[in-house]
Length: 287
Image 1 (tube, rainbow, N blue to C red):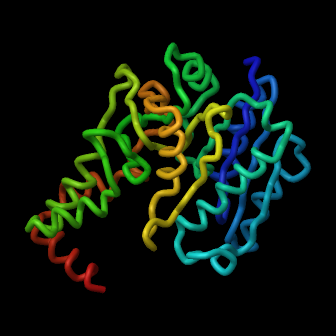
Image 2: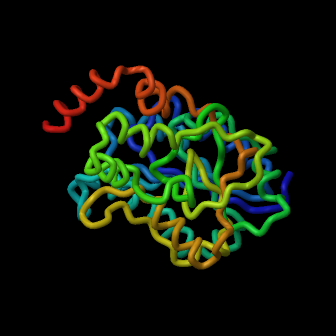
Image 3: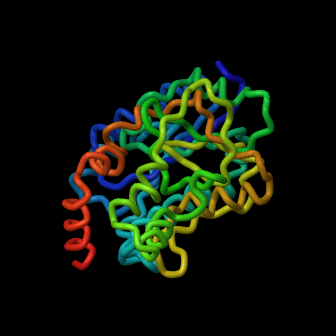
């Protein structure tokens, strides 16, 4: 047992059997800490999916907060990132308002859709105990590091890939070339024995944070009226207050990174002939 307290938090929409397995896995990990809680923030689910949430009702270590239909409740509710940011800020509210949670050491945010099925207690312990000053750590994947949308790291991904893609397009690159350069080629294999990779933001299925360093950081899912990954604002604020202390830990493995998150953006992009891809892109882009 690790003599530390950890708060796990996740958001869910239309939870499924994968959700149940994810929560059970996190629960088993939590049992090996001296104290733990799991916060589940649900929103926008169809009624038939609530049965999966009900598996955990009455468990004193699990708190479920149902937010209802956020599309009609919040500003920019039509945008998925705005809804997710709102839901994630709910568990930050509980963290900040609870005297109990303020005594906890770590916050682990995780996706509950089965994407982080390889995470283990031993990996988390090794990460927590690394000989490095850290505020947050994010996982690697076995085959391809996939989460480019949440990533900001010097000389790798420095802005929203959609912005980069449009820059390439405006400079005369074909759609396939633009997407390869802005997205597909950024999805790379990271060896497990590599050193820590400094980032301004990342995710990749989960993040482990020192609660003492979260401060007043908030999630924002909209920038200039457009969708933006909600992790960018949250992580960037922590990085501003504790620069150089956010890392991708290559030894910390969340999942395979293939095929669920990388097949279309990495593999299909490589094998579809350019003339076919560019033709289809033009058709669907115009629609």
